[in-house]
Image (cartoon, rainbow, N blue to C red):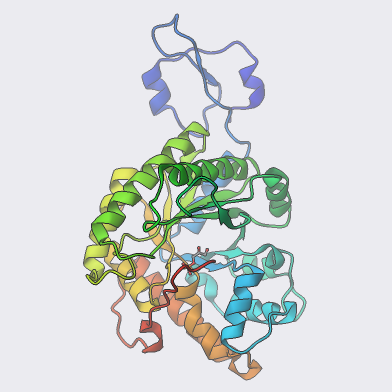
Length: 398
Ligand code: 13P
C-alpha cells in the first residue's frame, strides 16, 4: 500500500497509461506520476488511505447479493414524529424500545447487510442491556452512522438548503470508528421546484466530497447521498435532467478530493416524476430512466448503489428496485430504505410490548421482499393494503 512517506522519497516516474491501469489499491511503490512531456510540472497523487483495503472489504460486504441497508438513523426530532404517529412520547426509553425491536428481529442479517444509526443509537444498549452495535455484528450486519448535522437555509440561493457537519468531522468519524461504525452517511438535498440553482448543486456536491474524503481517512465507507426530492409537479424527464447534472458534479468533486471510488457507496433517489405530477411512471419506466442515469454517470468501480425510498410506498419502492434488477448491472443495485422498511412495522408495534413479535415479522416481510427485489425475483404477491400506501409528505424534513 502506498504511504505518505513514499511521497518524500525520490519519485518513480511512470507512463500515464500505466497509471490509469495501475490504479490498483495495492500499488506499492508509485506515489508520484509525471505526465508527458517530462518537462511539464509533475502531478502529485495523494497517498492511499491506510484503511484502503478495509474500505473495499466493508463496501463489498454491505453490497452483498440479496442484501441491503436498514436506514434507522432518524434524528431524535424525526424519531419523535414517528413515535407521535403511534401515540408515544419522544423519550429515550421509547426510542430505545423501538430500536431494540428493529435490531433484534430474528434472522434480519439474512436480508440486511448494514444498519445506519443515529449517534444516540451507536452508543445505546438494547432494553436488556446489550450494546446495539454488538447485536448488529452478531446478526452479521455492519453498523453505520449518520454524520451530517442536518440542513439549513443556503444564503444566496433560491430558498434552497445546504448540509452542515464538516467542522470537527474528522474527530467524530475517528470516534465513531472506535465505537464500531464501519460506514457513514451524509444526506444533502436538491430541490427541483426551487431551481435547483447552480450554487445549491455545487455546494451539495462539494460538501459530499469533503465528507467522503474525511470518512475514508477514518476507515468509514462514505454513503454519498444527494437526495433529489420528490416534491414538485415536474415530469420524469426533468428529474432525469437534474439528476444528470447533480451526479456529474458529485463525481467531479469526489475525484478532485481523491476519494477512492472502490470504497464508497451511493444513495440516490430513483428517477421518478415529481410527487404532484399527474403522469405517473410504471416500475419499468422508473427502472429505464434510473439505469440510464446511472450508466451515464456512475463508474463501475463503485461497488454499490443503495437507493433511498423518499416517500414511495413500501410496495412501490420494492417493485421499482425489482425492475432495476432484471438484468445484470455493473454495480450491486439495492436498497437503503427507512420509511419503506419501517412503516408497517412501526404501525404494527403501536408501542405495545405484546406486538413486538408481529412488528418484527412485518419488518422481516419487507426486508425479505427487498432482498428478493435485489435479486430481481420479487413478484409482489400477497402484499397488504398498508404496504401499498404512499408516504410522501410535502417539504419532508428527515
Ligand atoms: P427514506 O427511505 O425514508 O427516504 O430514508 C432514506 C434516508 O435518507 C435515511 O437514511
